[in-house]
Image (cartoon, rainbow, N blue to C red):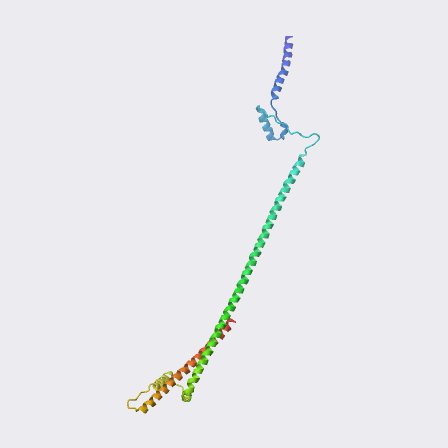
Length: 255
């Protein structure tokens, strides 16, 4: 009888131990439903169960009665929102790029227009400078021609005045010289010097002879002056012709 009572007492004691274990287990809260069942989560769960810990008093979110949360719809809306934001960023990027390209094209057009304007201005300045130089050349040539004509007219007047005094004898001697035979430059020089170097034998001359000698010397000096004037006149004519030919050659080269 005592053995049966002891067995009943042990059976009665076992619920108390279970109650104590249940009381100790009530201190721990493992939200296993919140974790997906994976190998990693199982390992973590095993580790947590191997040591006692106290979980904080977490309050789960309340779901309104009569409504069902559609996580797929939330995810889809989130993706649509991200897609719209990305599309907006892309549009803003391309708008900015388009604006930069338009500004670059406008800048290139301005640079090209400015370059064309500078080229046109340079061409106009060059043409004006050429016209100015041509006017100066024409004016200088005209003045030189007028000056040469004026000198030629003055020389012709002087020649006419001088030759009118003693034209006959001078022209006769000049004709004789031109109609003579050609001589070398040395012979001409000797002849001219011999003609010009006349001896003056005036020691035994009377007063009348001295007057005649003075008159002869004056005529000789006059002849020399006439020859000098003739040479100067020929030189001026030749210089004028050279200047005219030079101006014609210069104008021909410019054209």
